[in-house]
Amino acid sequence: MSGKWQPSFGQKDFNIDQQETLYDGFFQMHKLYLRHKTFAGSEIEIQRELFYRDDAVCALLYDAVKQSVVLIEQFRVGAFDSPDGPWLLELVAGIVEKGETTEDVARREAVEEAGAQLGEIKHITRFSPSTGATREYIDLLCAQVDSSGVEGIHGLPEEGEDIKVHVIPVEDAFELVQQGIINNAPAIIALQWLQLNKSALDQRWQ
Image (tube, rainbow, N blue to C red):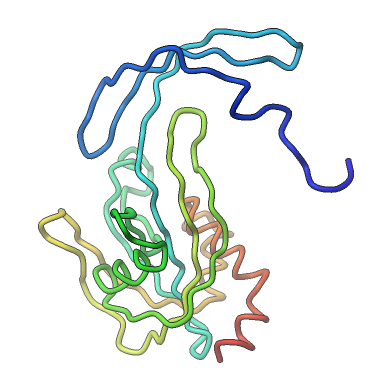
C-alpha cells in the first residue's frame, strides 16, 4: 500500500431502512435496521442497537514550566465493576453545547472541573471510542496551563459532580499509564501523544 489509505466503502454503500427510538433522555438508544455492501460483492441486512452520545471534548492540561499535568479524579458509573473501584484519573472533559467550539468547551470545563485558566490549545485528534455499539466522537486536545494553585474539590453540584484535582509530575503520569492505573482511553491517548510531542511543546510553552 502506498499513499493515503482509503476505506473500501463510503456513505453511499449502506442504507438505514428503519430506526426505532428505544430511549430518549440525557443519552439516547436507537434500534437500526440497515443494509450494507459486503467485501464479497453482495449485500447483508443487519439489526443493531445504537447508544447515541453527543460530541465531547477531552483536554490534557500540561504545565511545561513545572513539568506537570493536571488530572481530575471522579466517580464513573461505567467502571462500577472495576476491581480497583470506579474512581478514575481522567482529563478535563465536557459535552459540546450548541454554538460552542471545541476550545470553548475545554476552557469552560477547565474552570468548572479544575479551577484552571488555559493558554494555547493544540488539537490532538478526533476519535470514536467504541464504534461497535456507540455513536460518540471525542475531540482530544492538549492545553497549556499554569498549575500553580490548581487544587481542591470542583464540579457542579447540580450535575452530581464531585471532582478532585491532582497536579502530577509528567513522568509520573506516563508511568501511571504503563502501570494500567490510568486506564481510560482519552487519558491514555493524550498522555502517549504528549510523550511523543513533549520536546516540541516544551520549546514552545516553557
